[in-house]
Image (cartoon, rainbow over all chains, first blue to last red; front, side, top):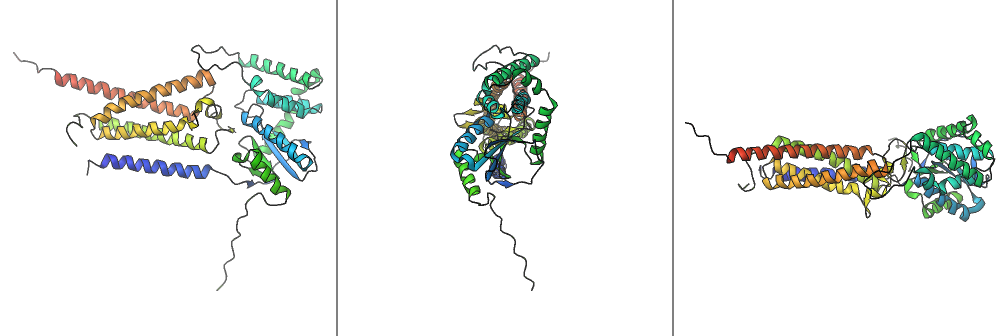
Amino acid sequence: MRRFLPFAIIGAVLLIAVGSGLLLFRSKQSSAPVKVAAGKPGAEPSHIRGDASARVTLEEFGDYQCEPCGVLAETLHKLEHSYGSRIQIVFRQFPLEMHAHAMTAACAAEAAGLQGRFWEMHDMLFQNALSWSHPGPRPFRRSIPVPQPDASANYARVRTVFAEYATNVGLDVERFKKEMDSEEVKARIRLDQERGDSLGVDRTPVLFIDAVKIPFSSYNVEALSKLIDDALQGKPLVPETPTPTPATPR
Amino acid sequence: MTNTQTVRGSYPKLHLLVAFLAVAGLADSIYLTITHLTGENIACLASSGCSEVLSSRYATVGSIPLAAFGVVGYFVAFSLAILAAFGYSHAMILLRFWVAGMLATTLWLLYVQAFLLHAFCTYCLLSATLTVFISAIVTVVYFVERRHQITAAAPPAVQS
């Protein structure tokens, strides 16, 4: 009996590992869209791309230093071309603390917005995210670590880069630099973050279509197109749960 | 169980401790693998610093998440530790080599996080800590075992 005991223990642990893995996989695989409450209002006026009276609204909570947000930005561009005035895209600021320059980038976008050039700066920040978000080269094989500039030097460097972008998109650069630090800009970001928190946003990017939270696995042109088509046709995006039939009194 | 499979000192308590730590590592690796498979690692999580590490190119070998290799690594380490605890000498020897490989991989991944990605993942650091403890225990067992062998091989002292 003792001879088989170690193999029984190993088999039991294998079964438990496989079982718990499957359970965890099923619980995390949230493939269904979720209807959310209205939440807090967010910064007004919001940044809208497309027709503000469009029937379907895509609302994104994003962070300029988050690479998946850059990928989603490209996807949304394609959808905008496909659907034109039938959809509107709203961008909400949700800079994460883990990204050193995300807040500065959000301030840059909002400061550009005060001069009516939000989307130009928005696109520029995403298109060049790799060049401004990392402090230096990250070599694959190198025994000596690359010396990294300190935080304040990095901050100054990023601000200089954003000022160049401001020039490129035709902003008044001195006004832009001043407004990046303004209370108005900070308040807009704070309001967007509060809206995100009230909607349960805990990561970036997060996308809502007509107040329905879309799972991350659907952030591609095909899946989003299908959801937008459904929304345009007035079909519910959230699978309807069967209402329980009241018990018949005997 | 034959005599060739067993040794006098199999240090069951220490090997059971290794098995326990390996189960903790197994749970950690399963969690990371599932996170990868469900696509959660690709998003930037507000509550964790892991996404930079787990979405990096070092987090996969081909299309297989590195954490899946961790699942295999910890499960094999667990199995060998259990067998060693029950006196299987070959398992004890294999465990030493296996754990040495795991430690080497762990050190490489720590280097990647510290010097290439400049970001640390809590779950990866937990795994590294477990591997270091497992390695330490296996090393202690090795040296204690060696000392016993030397003592057993020495001729008895002759009394005058």
